Length: 111
Ligand SMILES: [Zn+2]
Ligand SMILES: [Zn+2]
Image 1: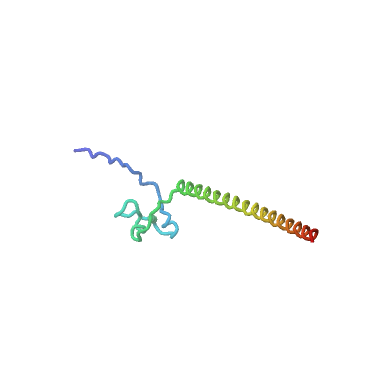
Image 2 (image 1 turned 60 degrees about the vertical axis):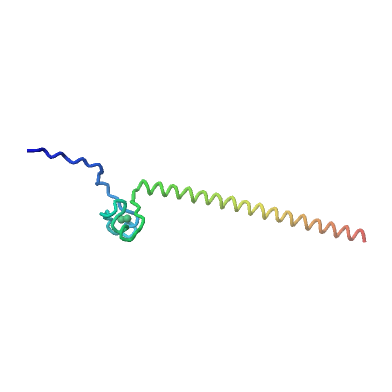
């Protein structure tokens, strides 16, 4: 009687992962037999199959948050620049006005 060696499972298949598309569509995420990287639905529809993992999602959310923050900062910077430009613009306008007035006065005095 030969002992049958217990199969050593390299991959633990207990981890339940649902790809983001199946999750979104609320359908069963069945691993594709033709493609290890994809689930059936994604394989059939030729979609990028992204396995849903909370940690990955968290990282993605964190990444997106920083992207959004960066954009917010940039927008704020731009707004500040626009405001300072507008200020500059009014300063220039006022200067021009004053110069005009001075010129007018000078004109008046000279005539
Ligand atoms: Zn799926
Ligand atoms: Zn999928």
